Length: 391
Image 1 (cartoon, rainbow, N blue to C red):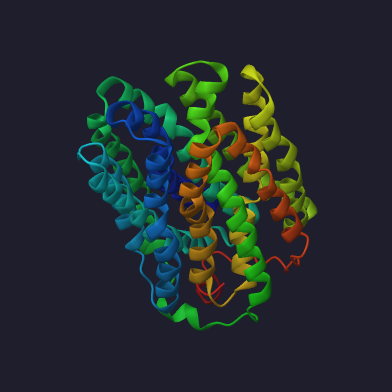
Image 2 (image 1 turned 135 degrees about the horizontal axis):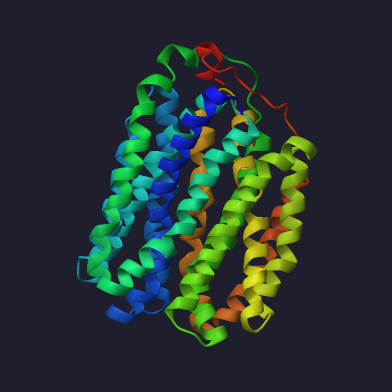
């Protein structure tokens, strides 16, 4: 990555980490909601739906909107809403208000990602390593959620959640200086560098959907499952989520580097093939050894994460906002939409059986990934308005 791109890319990664930390905070809330408000599996999985339902609908719509006109202010507004929703969820009483507050956070996440991904492409030139750095900021945010949020909630209970808004401030300080300097101008959207490949984009979207159901389903119930499996308390739960998110950050960073050497599509489907035995190990291996399988699963699921974004942008070179909104939106939202069904299955059977059933999802992603074409990698020039704006 060129030196001129490194600092703004790192600042974007910090902002991305800030907003995704509040996505990662939803699973962290689960044990505290069960303890303080006596929620069951279906109720807490409904909160995963709340965080994702608006995002699943709104994020592609935000992408379409930003394809028509530049909306750089969506990134900081999204940061604020993502944090505010989690803060309010810790204060309000009653399930409907908690559901609405978590949904507000999901809306903020939806508003942030399409314009932030467009900005990241302008800053990095579409380079896989640069885009993986932007993406890994989100993974680090997820990884820090149990490290930062769990101790705050353990000491102060759910009513301490507003203290996490300090992290929103950090994200805003990192993001705001980039908006005027690096945001694409409206006129740059007229360039048409190539034809949109909608069949490939639809297949990629299907890959992302099944990946999302597996990963979000795992993260939603992992804390409770580990407590049952290793017979430990909230510390073991937070440690499991930290391993999941930290290993995911490592996987995302590896994705860009592996793609440079072997190609994005090949790396994608090999990663999903590796996720099958790793996820089976999470469900079946007893004792502390399951932490190793949690890490392996997270790496395998996360290596393709930034590759989804750049593949989507290259499949739809004339609709970067739409591609970014769908790829980043489906990465979390689709899993949240299906989480209540997994909650019903867990209530009817067990958490172990439910996690074991998730193994079919990376297998499906592997099969679908084998059908994807490898597009030519488009790396746009830095400070080249005609190319950075419209890919």
